[in-house]
Length: 368
Image 1 (cartoon, rainbow, N blue to C red):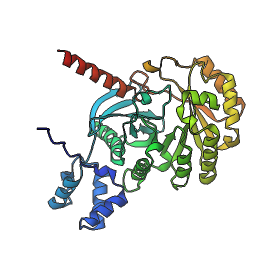
Image 2 (spheres, helix red, strand yellow):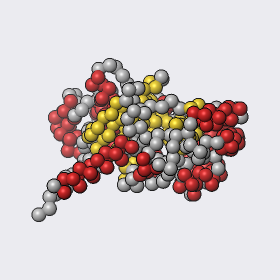
Image 3 (tube, rainbow, N blue to C red):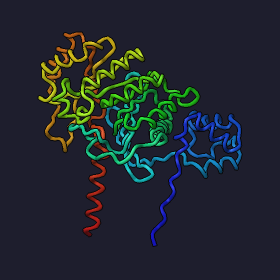
Image 4 (cartoon, helix red, strand yellow):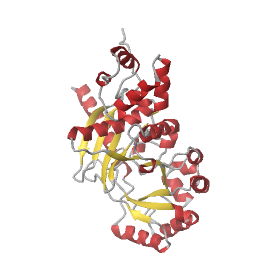
């Protein structure tokens, strides 16, 4: 006789405040109850429904019947000498995701994951080593912030997550609706109140979704993973470029800038003798010339991944020469500060290495 599959309740973090209000009213209560629950969740940051002491026992029981609070289980925490903390979380179905806390000069920034695996197919990236298995729902994305904040609360040092970057495993715009709900949840003034201008969403270049994002009316920052200045090179290292060429991508970016009057950041990973020549730098300067006043380029040191041994980190000399060409062309650019280089630094690397070890243990166990 097969064992019955355990029911997985949705996380209450998956509800926006408007959705929570609707749920409370549908279940026979008043709107103010939703505001009380929201306060318990995001300001008092309780760890169980029982801690919501101004709700009746009957209403608490109804919440427990319909929702879980936190859907994630902490598997591994790695802390770097520079204060970067990398978390490996287990989802209710046993799948694994990564979240990273970075200590910046402007505050504490959390990088969240939006998918289990990734289908974009960037040839240098650890995140894409395992194909996309599913999207995360809003509750699972929001819970990453809540668990990191709990980790900080437990230290009793008064630290608070002040910035969020949606740049972890997966393509955020391939999970568009859940990501938008997540953004509205963490930005809500009555909850975590993380300012929209302290939130950045990164995309590998889904042009049609950039246009849709432009019309959302939210002041969240947009970053584009560019990594190459021409179609041939970009298509060879980023499969997404075969569907959304640089022409299509920059048409969408120009629409975004015209619609929002907001700056776009370009992420550019420096791959030694692949995309880091002075000629590449000049191509990049020419490519972004039309939107120069409202764009910014981050030059990113590459974190090597054993499965992608065809790539290595650009030398300091090549990075400096590349940077100099951009600056001479009046390009706003910076070499990004590194975080967590003494732990599994590359995005997706901790998850990938853990899954390898789990498989090895399983094989060893079966052999005994």
